Image (tube, rainbow, N blue to C red; front, side, top):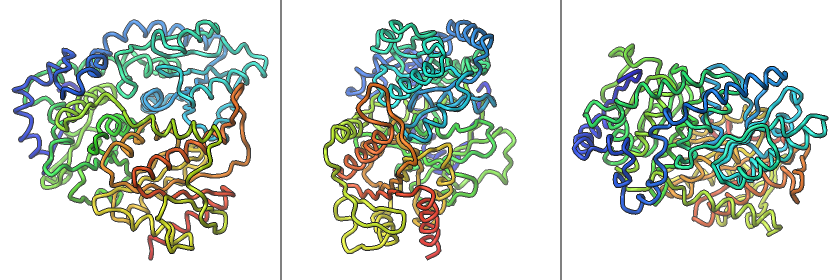
Length: 542
Protein backbone atom coordinates (compact mmCIF):
# COMPACT_ATOMS: atom_id res chain seq x y z
CA UNK A 1 0.00 0.00 0.00
CA UNK A 2 2.19 2.78 -1.29
CA UNK A 3 5.03 3.42 1.12
CA UNK A 4 3.26 1.93 4.16
CA UNK A 5 4.02 -1.33 5.93
CA UNK A 6 1.91 -3.04 8.59
CA UNK A 7 2.03 -6.20 10.70
CA UNK A 8 -0.46 -7.17 13.42
CA UNK A 9 -0.21 -10.02 15.91
CA UNK A 10 -2.15 -11.56 18.78
CA UNK A 11 -5.23 -9.69 19.99
CA UNK A 12 -4.62 -6.94 17.40
CA UNK A 13 -4.89 -9.43 14.55
CA UNK A 14 -7.99 -10.97 16.15
CA UNK A 15 -9.60 -7.51 16.28
CA UNK A 16 -8.83 -6.98 12.61
CA UNK A 17 -10.43 -10.29 11.68
CA UNK A 18 -13.47 -9.43 13.80
CA UNK A 19 -14.12 -5.91 12.53
CA UNK A 20 -12.58 -5.26 9.10
CA UNK A 21 -15.09 -7.31 7.08
CA UNK A 22 -17.96 -5.24 8.48
CA UNK A 23 -16.03 -2.00 7.90
CA UNK A 24 -15.55 -3.04 4.28
CA UNK A 25 -19.18 -4.05 3.89
CA UNK A 26 -20.28 -0.69 5.30
CA UNK A 27 -17.92 1.11 2.87
CA UNK A 28 -16.39 3.04 5.76
CA UNK A 29 -13.13 3.95 4.00
CA UNK A 30 -14.72 5.34 0.84
CA UNK A 31 -17.39 7.16 2.84
CA UNK A 32 -14.73 8.88 4.94
CA UNK A 33 -12.92 9.90 1.75
CA UNK A 34 -16.23 11.24 0.42
CA UNK A 35 -16.67 13.26 3.66
CA UNK A 36 -19.80 11.42 4.70
CA UNK A 37 -20.67 12.36 8.32
CA UNK A 38 -23.03 9.39 8.67
CA UNK A 39 -19.99 7.16 9.28
CA UNK A 40 -20.20 8.10 12.97
CA UNK A 41 -22.87 8.00 15.67
CA UNK A 42 -25.76 10.42 15.34
CA UNK A 43 -24.40 12.74 18.04
CA UNK A 44 -21.13 13.16 16.07
CA UNK A 45 -22.59 14.01 12.70
CA UNK A 46 -23.06 17.76 13.08
CA UNK A 47 -19.39 18.15 14.03
CA UNK A 48 -18.22 15.70 11.37
CA UNK A 49 -20.13 17.68 8.73
CA UNK A 50 -17.68 20.57 9.16
CA UNK A 51 -14.51 18.69 10.17
CA UNK A 52 -13.56 16.43 7.24
CA UNK A 53 -11.40 18.77 5.17
CA UNK A 54 -8.28 16.84 6.17
CA UNK A 55 -9.07 13.89 3.89
CA UNK A 56 -7.99 15.82 0.78
CA UNK A 57 -5.71 18.40 2.41
CA UNK A 58 -2.70 17.09 0.51
CA UNK A 59 -4.40 18.38 -2.67
CA UNK A 60 -6.19 21.49 -1.44
CA UNK A 61 -3.02 22.71 0.30
CA UNK A 62 -0.87 22.62 -2.83
CA UNK A 63 -1.55 26.27 -3.81
CA UNK A 64 0.06 27.34 -0.54
CA UNK A 65 3.43 25.83 -1.43
CA UNK A 66 4.71 28.53 -3.86
CA UNK A 67 3.49 31.28 -1.51
CA UNK A 68 5.36 29.76 1.44
CA UNK A 69 8.56 29.19 -0.55
CA UNK A 70 8.49 32.72 -1.96
CA UNK A 71 8.20 34.15 1.54
CA UNK A 72 11.02 31.90 2.75
CA UNK A 73 13.27 33.23 -0.03
CA UNK A 74 12.36 36.83 0.84
CA UNK A 75 13.16 36.33 4.51
CA UNK A 76 16.48 34.65 3.78
CA UNK A 77 17.43 37.45 1.41
CA UNK A 78 16.91 39.78 4.39
CA UNK A 79 19.11 37.62 6.61
CA UNK A 80 16.18 36.12 8.51
CA UNK A 81 16.72 32.36 8.76
CA UNK A 82 15.59 31.40 12.28
CA UNK A 83 11.91 30.47 12.48
CA UNK A 84 10.17 30.44 15.85
CA UNK A 85 6.71 28.93 16.08
CA UNK A 86 4.24 30.16 18.69
CA UNK A 87 1.46 27.59 18.81
CA UNK A 88 -0.08 24.94 21.02
CA UNK A 89 -1.25 21.37 20.42
CA UNK A 90 -2.20 20.75 16.81
CA UNK A 91 -0.66 24.07 15.80
CA UNK A 92 2.83 23.03 16.94
CA UNK A 93 3.17 19.25 17.23
CA UNK A 94 2.96 18.45 13.50
CA UNK A 95 5.48 21.07 12.30
CA UNK A 96 7.84 20.08 15.10
CA UNK A 97 7.80 16.47 13.86
CA UNK A 98 7.98 17.47 10.19
CA UNK A 99 11.06 19.61 10.77
CA UNK A 100 12.81 17.20 13.14
CA UNK A 101 12.28 14.31 10.73
CA UNK A 102 13.81 16.38 7.93
CA UNK A 103 16.68 17.59 10.16
CA UNK A 104 15.57 21.21 9.81
CA UNK A 105 15.71 23.67 12.71
CA UNK A 106 12.37 24.97 13.94
CA UNK A 107 12.21 26.57 17.38
CA UNK A 108 8.87 25.72 18.98
CA UNK A 109 7.66 28.02 21.73
CA UNK A 110 4.73 26.09 23.20
CA UNK A 111 5.09 26.99 26.85
CA UNK A 112 4.27 29.68 29.37
CA UNK A 113 7.31 28.86 31.50
CA UNK A 114 9.05 32.25 31.79
CA UNK A 115 12.55 30.78 31.55
CA UNK A 116 11.71 28.80 28.41
CA UNK A 117 9.99 31.76 26.73
CA UNK A 118 12.87 34.08 27.67
CA UNK A 119 15.41 31.59 26.32
CA UNK A 120 13.65 31.45 22.95
CA UNK A 121 13.13 35.22 22.93
CA UNK A 122 16.77 36.20 23.50
CA UNK A 123 18.45 33.79 21.06
CA UNK A 124 19.34 35.30 17.65
CA UNK A 125 16.45 37.76 17.67
CA UNK A 126 18.01 39.79 14.86
CA UNK A 127 17.67 36.85 12.43
CA UNK A 128 14.31 35.59 13.73
CA UNK A 129 10.82 35.54 12.26
CA UNK A 130 7.84 34.48 14.37
CA UNK A 131 5.04 32.27 13.05
CA UNK A 132 1.91 32.65 15.19
CA UNK A 133 -0.44 29.70 14.68
CA UNK A 134 -3.94 29.56 16.14
CA UNK A 135 -7.29 28.71 14.58
CA UNK A 136 -9.02 31.53 16.44
CA UNK A 137 -6.17 33.54 17.89
CA UNK A 138 -7.75 33.38 21.34
CA UNK A 139 -5.35 30.75 22.73
CA UNK A 140 -3.89 32.51 25.77
CA UNK A 141 -0.43 30.94 25.46
CA UNK A 142 -0.03 31.85 21.79
CA UNK A 143 -1.42 35.35 22.25
CA UNK A 144 1.00 35.95 25.14
CA UNK A 145 3.96 34.71 23.10
CA UNK A 146 3.03 36.98 20.20
CA UNK A 147 2.79 40.00 22.48
CA UNK A 148 6.19 39.47 24.07
CA UNK A 149 7.91 38.84 20.73
CA UNK A 150 6.34 41.89 19.13
CA UNK A 151 7.63 44.06 21.96
CA UNK A 152 11.08 42.46 21.79
CA UNK A 153 11.34 43.14 18.04
CA UNK A 154 10.37 46.76 18.58
CA UNK A 155 12.74 47.19 21.54
CA UNK A 156 15.58 45.85 19.39
CA UNK A 157 14.90 48.44 16.71
CA UNK A 158 13.48 45.85 14.31
CA UNK A 159 10.30 46.32 12.30
CA UNK A 160 8.02 43.97 14.26
CA UNK A 161 5.21 43.59 11.70
CA UNK A 162 7.71 42.49 9.05
CA UNK A 163 8.89 39.66 11.33
CA UNK A 164 5.48 38.19 12.20
CA UNK A 165 3.64 35.63 10.06
CA UNK A 166 0.19 34.39 11.06
CA UNK A 167 -1.65 31.14 10.37
CA UNK A 168 -5.32 31.20 11.33
CA UNK A 169 -8.81 30.40 10.10
CA UNK A 170 -10.39 32.85 7.65
CA UNK A 171 -12.52 35.43 9.38
CA UNK A 172 -11.17 34.62 12.84
CA UNK A 173 -10.52 37.49 15.28
CA UNK A 174 -6.78 37.00 14.70
CA UNK A 175 -7.23 37.07 10.93
CA UNK A 176 -8.76 40.53 11.03
CA UNK A 177 -6.44 41.89 13.72
CA UNK A 178 -3.29 40.62 11.97
CA UNK A 179 -4.18 42.19 8.67
CA UNK A 180 -4.97 45.45 10.43
CA UNK A 181 -1.60 45.31 12.24
CA UNK A 182 0.20 44.91 8.91
CA UNK A 183 1.96 41.64 9.72
CA UNK A 184 4.27 40.25 7.06
CA UNK A 185 1.85 37.56 5.89
CA UNK A 186 -1.41 35.98 6.94
CA UNK A 187 -2.08 32.43 5.76
CA UNK A 188 -5.62 31.14 6.10
CA UNK A 189 -6.09 27.48 6.91
CA UNK A 190 -9.05 25.32 5.97
CA UNK A 191 -11.70 25.94 8.67
CA UNK A 192 -13.11 22.43 8.08
CA UNK A 193 -10.00 20.85 9.60
CA UNK A 194 -9.61 20.53 13.37
CA UNK A 195 -6.25 21.34 14.92
CA UNK A 196 -5.07 17.80 15.56
CA UNK A 197 -5.88 16.79 11.95
CA UNK A 198 -4.13 19.83 10.44
CA UNK A 199 -0.64 18.45 9.65
CA UNK A 200 -1.20 18.67 5.89
CA UNK A 201 -2.74 22.15 6.02
CA UNK A 202 -1.25 25.61 6.48
CA UNK A 203 -0.67 24.85 10.16
CA UNK A 204 1.84 22.14 9.29
CA UNK A 205 3.15 23.61 6.06
CA UNK A 206 3.83 27.29 6.81
CA UNK A 207 6.32 26.93 9.70
CA UNK A 208 7.88 23.81 8.15
CA UNK A 209 8.29 25.38 4.73
CA UNK A 210 9.68 28.64 6.10
CA UNK A 211 12.16 26.65 8.17
CA UNK A 212 13.42 24.82 5.09
CA UNK A 213 11.48 21.56 4.66
CA UNK A 214 10.61 20.32 1.17
CA UNK A 215 6.87 20.62 1.84
CA UNK A 216 5.88 19.67 -1.71
CA UNK A 217 7.56 16.29 -1.21
CA UNK A 218 5.87 15.95 2.18
CA UNK A 219 2.43 16.45 0.60
CA UNK A 220 3.33 13.99 -2.15
CA UNK A 221 4.00 11.31 0.48
CA UNK A 222 0.39 11.57 1.61
CA UNK A 223 -0.95 11.88 -1.92
CA UNK A 224 0.70 8.57 -2.82
CA UNK A 225 -1.36 6.71 -0.21
CA UNK A 226 -4.83 8.27 -0.31
CA UNK A 227 -6.26 5.98 -2.99
CA UNK A 228 -5.29 2.94 -0.92
CA UNK A 229 -6.58 4.36 2.36
CA UNK A 230 -9.91 5.21 0.71
CA UNK A 231 -10.46 1.69 -0.66
CA UNK A 232 -13.16 -0.58 0.74
CA UNK A 233 -10.84 -3.56 0.80
CA UNK A 234 -9.81 -5.98 3.53
CA UNK A 235 -6.16 -5.16 2.76
CA UNK A 236 -6.70 -1.48 3.64
CA UNK A 237 -4.16 -0.71 6.37
CA UNK A 238 -6.27 2.16 7.75
CA UNK A 239 -9.18 -0.19 8.41
CA UNK A 240 -6.82 -2.72 9.95
CA UNK A 241 -5.11 -0.18 12.20
CA UNK A 242 -8.39 1.37 13.34
CA UNK A 243 -9.74 -2.08 14.20
CA UNK A 244 -6.53 -3.10 15.96
CA UNK A 245 -6.41 -0.08 18.27
CA UNK A 246 -10.14 0.16 19.07
CA UNK A 247 -11.58 -3.30 18.45
CA UNK A 248 -9.82 -5.61 20.89
CA UNK A 249 -12.05 -7.50 23.34
CA UNK A 250 -11.74 -6.64 26.12
CA UNK A 251 -10.48 -3.24 24.95
CA UNK A 252 -6.72 -2.81 25.25
CA UNK A 253 -6.92 0.91 25.82
CA UNK A 254 -3.24 1.69 26.62
CA UNK A 255 -1.32 2.05 23.34
CA UNK A 256 2.39 1.64 24.13
CA UNK A 257 4.29 3.59 21.45
CA UNK A 258 7.91 2.56 20.99
CA UNK A 259 10.08 3.95 18.19
CA UNK A 260 12.40 1.24 16.88
CA UNK A 261 14.32 3.30 14.35
CA UNK A 262 11.44 4.61 12.26
CA UNK A 263 13.31 7.78 11.34
CA UNK A 264 10.20 9.83 12.17
CA UNK A 265 11.52 12.05 14.93
CA UNK A 266 8.94 12.65 17.66
CA UNK A 267 6.14 11.00 15.68
CA UNK A 268 4.65 9.34 18.76
CA UNK A 269 4.18 12.75 20.44
CA UNK A 270 2.10 13.90 17.47
CA UNK A 271 0.09 10.66 17.42
CA UNK A 272 -0.44 11.00 21.18
CA UNK A 273 -2.45 14.19 20.76
CA UNK A 274 -4.35 12.93 17.72
CA UNK A 275 -5.50 9.74 19.44
CA UNK A 276 -5.98 10.90 23.04
CA UNK A 277 -7.88 14.07 22.21
CA UNK A 278 -9.99 12.37 19.55
CA UNK A 279 -11.05 9.34 21.60
CA UNK A 280 -10.86 10.38 25.28
CA UNK A 281 -14.47 11.23 26.07
CA UNK A 282 -17.64 9.74 27.54
CA UNK A 283 -15.36 7.86 29.98
CA UNK A 284 -13.85 5.76 27.22
CA UNK A 285 -10.91 6.23 24.87
CA UNK A 286 -7.39 5.18 23.95
CA UNK A 287 -4.38 6.42 25.91
CA UNK A 288 -1.09 6.56 23.96
CA UNK A 289 1.91 5.98 26.22
CA UNK A 290 5.16 7.14 24.61
CA UNK A 291 8.06 5.05 25.90
CA UNK A 292 11.77 4.57 25.31
CA UNK A 293 13.75 1.46 24.33
CA UNK A 294 13.40 -1.30 26.90
CA UNK A 295 10.64 0.51 28.82
CA UNK A 296 8.81 -1.49 31.49
CA UNK A 297 5.55 -1.18 29.54
CA UNK A 298 6.92 -3.17 26.60
CA UNK A 299 6.73 -6.33 28.71
CA UNK A 300 2.97 -6.38 28.16
CA UNK A 301 -0.19 -6.41 30.29
CA UNK A 302 -3.83 -7.32 29.59
CA UNK A 303 -4.77 -3.71 28.79
CA UNK A 304 -1.66 -2.89 26.68
CA UNK A 305 -1.38 -2.86 22.91
CA UNK A 306 2.17 -2.49 21.62
CA UNK A 307 2.63 -0.01 18.76
CA UNK A 308 6.04 -0.43 17.11
CA UNK A 309 7.28 2.29 14.77
CA UNK A 310 9.94 0.68 12.60
CA UNK A 311 12.05 1.61 9.59
CA UNK A 312 10.61 -1.09 7.32
CA UNK A 313 8.20 -3.85 8.29
CA UNK A 314 9.46 -5.81 5.29
CA UNK A 315 12.81 -6.22 7.01
CA UNK A 316 11.35 -7.71 10.22
CA UNK A 317 12.26 -11.38 10.56
CA UNK A 318 10.41 -14.12 12.42
CA UNK A 319 12.69 -13.43 15.37
CA UNK A 320 11.51 -9.80 15.41
CA UNK A 321 7.80 -10.65 15.55
CA UNK A 322 6.12 -12.36 18.50
CA UNK A 323 2.96 -13.81 16.96
CA UNK A 324 1.30 -14.13 20.37
CA UNK A 325 1.91 -10.55 21.50
CA UNK A 326 -0.85 -7.96 21.14
CA UNK A 327 0.97 -5.62 18.80
CA UNK A 328 1.10 -3.70 15.56
CA UNK A 329 4.23 -2.69 13.69
CA UNK A 330 4.18 0.13 11.15
CA UNK A 331 6.56 1.76 8.71
CA UNK A 332 6.25 4.46 6.10
CA UNK A 333 7.15 7.98 5.12
CA UNK A 334 6.02 10.81 7.37
CA UNK A 335 3.25 12.19 5.17
CA UNK A 336 1.88 8.70 4.56
CA UNK A 337 1.95 7.80 8.25
CA UNK A 338 0.22 11.01 9.29
CA UNK A 339 -2.64 10.44 6.87
CA UNK A 340 -2.85 6.77 7.88
CA UNK A 341 -3.18 7.59 11.57
CA UNK A 342 -5.79 10.27 10.87
CA UNK A 343 -7.91 7.70 9.01
CA UNK A 344 -7.32 5.04 11.67
CA UNK A 345 -8.22 7.40 14.50
CA UNK A 346 -11.59 8.37 13.06
CA UNK A 347 -12.28 4.70 12.32
CA UNK A 348 -11.48 4.00 15.96
CA UNK A 349 -14.01 6.69 16.86
CA UNK A 350 -16.66 4.81 14.91
CA UNK A 351 -15.87 1.55 16.71
CA UNK A 352 -15.89 3.28 20.12
CA UNK A 353 -19.19 5.02 19.36
CA UNK A 354 -17.87 8.53 20.06
CA UNK A 355 -17.32 11.81 18.20
CA UNK A 356 -13.64 11.85 17.13
CA UNK A 357 -13.77 15.54 16.17
CA UNK A 358 -14.82 17.33 19.36
CA UNK A 359 -12.89 17.97 22.59
CA UNK A 360 -15.58 18.79 25.16
CA UNK A 361 -13.36 18.76 28.24
CA UNK A 362 -10.45 20.91 27.03
CA UNK A 363 -12.12 24.15 28.07
CA UNK A 364 -12.56 23.14 31.73
CA UNK A 365 -8.92 23.68 32.72
CA UNK A 366 -8.84 26.99 30.80
CA UNK A 367 -11.85 28.29 32.73
CA UNK A 368 -10.27 27.24 36.03
CA UNK A 369 -7.00 28.95 35.11
CA UNK A 370 -8.78 32.18 34.19
CA UNK A 371 -10.58 32.07 37.52
CA UNK A 372 -7.29 31.78 39.37
CA UNK A 373 -5.78 34.63 37.38
CA UNK A 374 -8.70 36.70 38.62
CA UNK A 375 -7.32 36.11 42.14
CA UNK A 376 -9.66 33.34 43.24
CA UNK A 377 -7.91 31.52 46.15
CA UNK A 378 -6.29 28.24 45.12
CA UNK A 379 -8.37 25.27 46.37
CA UNK A 380 -5.40 22.87 46.47
CA UNK A 381 -3.37 24.27 49.37
CA UNK A 382 0.16 23.42 50.50
CA UNK A 383 0.05 20.60 53.04
CA UNK A 384 3.68 19.88 53.92
CA UNK A 385 7.22 20.89 53.00
CA UNK A 386 10.46 18.98 52.95
CA UNK A 387 13.78 20.35 51.74
CA UNK A 388 13.23 22.35 48.56
CA UNK A 389 9.84 20.76 47.83
CA UNK A 390 6.41 21.95 48.89
CA UNK A 391 3.57 19.43 48.65
CA UNK A 392 -0.04 20.04 47.66
CA UNK A 393 -2.68 17.39 47.11
CA UNK A 394 -6.32 16.77 46.37
CA UNK A 395 -8.62 16.29 49.34
CA UNK A 396 -8.06 13.16 51.40
CA UNK A 397 -4.98 11.94 49.54
CA UNK A 398 -2.51 12.76 52.32
CA UNK A 399 -4.47 11.76 55.39
CA UNK A 400 -1.97 10.55 57.98
CA UNK A 401 0.99 11.44 55.70
CA UNK A 402 3.73 13.75 56.99
CA UNK A 403 6.70 13.07 54.67
CA UNK A 404 7.45 13.69 51.02
CA UNK A 405 8.13 9.99 50.42
CA UNK A 406 4.82 9.16 52.08
CA UNK A 407 3.01 11.64 49.84
CA UNK A 408 4.38 10.05 46.68
CA UNK A 409 3.65 6.57 47.99
CA UNK A 410 0.05 7.63 48.72
CA UNK A 411 -0.42 8.81 45.15
CA UNK A 412 0.93 5.60 43.69
CA UNK A 413 -1.21 3.54 46.06
CA UNK A 414 -4.26 5.30 44.63
CA UNK A 415 -3.59 3.81 41.19
CA UNK A 416 -6.21 1.19 40.29
CA UNK A 417 -5.12 -2.08 38.70
CA UNK A 418 -6.17 -0.79 35.27
CA UNK A 419 -4.94 2.75 35.87
CA UNK A 420 -2.16 4.98 34.62
CA UNK A 421 0.08 7.63 36.15
CA UNK A 422 0.38 10.98 34.40
CA UNK A 423 3.47 13.07 35.17
CA UNK A 424 2.94 16.72 34.29
CA UNK A 425 6.00 18.97 34.38
CA UNK A 426 5.26 22.70 34.36
CA UNK A 427 8.89 23.53 33.66
CA UNK A 428 11.23 24.48 30.81
CA UNK A 429 11.25 21.49 28.47
CA UNK A 430 14.36 22.80 26.73
CA UNK A 431 16.45 23.14 29.89
CA UNK A 432 14.83 20.66 32.28
CA UNK A 433 14.56 17.66 29.97
CA UNK A 434 16.39 15.43 32.44
CA UNK A 435 13.11 15.08 34.33
CA UNK A 436 11.83 12.77 31.60
CA UNK A 437 14.33 10.14 32.76
CA UNK A 438 12.09 9.53 35.78
CA UNK A 439 9.24 8.23 33.60
CA UNK A 440 10.53 4.64 33.25
CA UNK A 441 11.60 4.62 36.90
CA UNK A 442 8.03 5.35 37.94
CA UNK A 443 6.69 2.80 35.47
CA UNK A 444 8.90 0.12 36.98
CA UNK A 445 7.91 1.13 40.52
CA UNK A 446 4.17 1.08 39.83
CA UNK A 447 3.88 -1.73 37.32
CA UNK A 448 1.50 0.53 35.40
CA UNK A 449 1.89 2.77 32.35
CA UNK A 450 3.28 6.25 32.95
CA UNK A 451 2.78 9.19 30.60
CA UNK A 452 4.95 12.29 30.67
CA UNK A 453 3.73 15.69 29.53
CA UNK A 454 5.16 19.19 29.61
CA UNK A 455 2.69 21.73 30.93
CA UNK A 456 0.81 23.57 29.63
CA UNK A 457 1.50 21.89 26.29
CA UNK A 458 -0.17 18.60 27.28
CA UNK A 459 -3.40 20.46 28.14
CA UNK A 460 -3.92 20.77 24.39
CA UNK A 461 -3.21 17.06 23.92
CA UNK A 462 -3.74 14.36 26.53
CA UNK A 463 -5.53 16.86 28.77
CA UNK A 464 -8.82 15.96 27.04
CA UNK A 465 -8.31 12.26 27.83
CA UNK A 466 -7.51 12.98 31.50
CA UNK A 467 -10.89 14.61 31.98
CA UNK A 468 -13.06 12.84 29.42
CA UNK A 469 -11.57 9.34 29.31
CA UNK A 470 -11.80 6.46 31.78
CA UNK A 471 -11.41 7.81 35.32
CA UNK A 472 -8.52 5.56 36.27
CA UNK A 473 -5.63 8.06 36.25
CA UNK A 474 -3.48 9.47 39.03
CA UNK A 475 -1.69 12.76 38.44
CA UNK A 476 1.73 13.96 39.56
CA UNK A 477 2.34 17.64 38.87
CA UNK A 478 5.82 19.16 39.14
CA UNK A 479 6.09 22.96 39.22
CA UNK A 480 8.78 25.38 40.33
CA UNK A 481 9.57 28.90 41.39
CA UNK A 482 11.44 30.54 38.55
CA UNK A 483 14.66 32.48 38.97
CA UNK A 484 13.05 35.16 36.79
CA UNK A 485 9.66 36.19 35.45
CA UNK A 486 8.53 37.79 32.24
CA UNK A 487 5.74 40.32 31.87
CA UNK A 488 3.18 40.07 29.08
CA UNK A 489 2.58 43.42 27.35
CA UNK A 490 -0.85 44.92 28.11
CA UNK A 491 -1.81 41.92 30.23
CA UNK A 492 -2.35 42.10 34.01
CA UNK A 493 -0.43 38.88 34.65
CA UNK A 494 3.07 37.55 33.97
CA UNK A 495 4.16 34.29 32.38
CA UNK A 496 5.05 33.00 35.85
CA UNK A 497 1.57 33.78 37.13
CA UNK A 498 -0.02 32.26 34.04
CA UNK A 499 1.78 28.91 34.24
CA UNK A 500 1.06 28.67 37.97
CA UNK A 501 -2.64 29.28 37.32
CA UNK A 502 -2.67 26.69 34.53
CA UNK A 503 -1.17 24.01 36.80
CA UNK A 504 -3.55 24.84 39.64
CA UNK A 505 -6.55 25.08 37.34
CA UNK A 506 -5.97 21.64 35.87
CA UNK A 507 -5.46 20.18 39.35
CA UNK A 508 -8.79 21.65 40.47
CA UNK A 509 -10.67 20.12 37.53
CA UNK A 510 -9.08 16.68 38.03
CA UNK A 511 -9.74 16.77 41.77
CA UNK A 512 -13.37 17.74 41.14
CA UNK A 513 -13.66 14.56 39.06
CA UNK A 514 -12.55 12.57 42.09
CA UNK A 515 -9.07 11.83 40.80
CA UNK A 516 -5.94 11.86 43.01
CA UNK A 517 -3.62 14.77 42.30
CA UNK A 518 -0.24 15.39 43.94
CA UNK A 519 1.65 18.60 43.19
CA UNK A 520 5.31 18.87 44.07
CA UNK A 521 6.36 22.52 43.91
CA UNK A 522 10.10 23.16 43.78
CA UNK A 523 10.87 26.34 45.71
CA UNK A 524 14.47 26.04 44.48
CA UNK A 525 14.35 24.38 41.07
CA UNK A 526 17.88 22.98 40.89
CA UNK A 527 17.85 21.63 44.43
CA UNK A 528 14.28 20.42 44.06
CA UNK A 529 15.00 18.49 40.87
CA UNK A 530 17.91 16.72 42.56
CA UNK A 531 15.75 15.96 45.58
CA UNK A 532 12.91 14.65 43.40
CA UNK A 533 15.27 12.46 41.39
CA UNK A 534 16.61 10.85 44.57
CA UNK A 535 13.12 10.46 46.03
CA UNK A 536 11.78 8.57 43.03
CA UNK A 537 14.85 6.37 42.68
CA UNK A 538 14.68 5.49 46.37
CA UNK A 539 11.03 4.61 45.95
CA UNK A 540 11.82 2.34 43.00
CA UNK A 541 14.42 0.45 45.05
CA UNK A 542 12.18 0.04 48.08
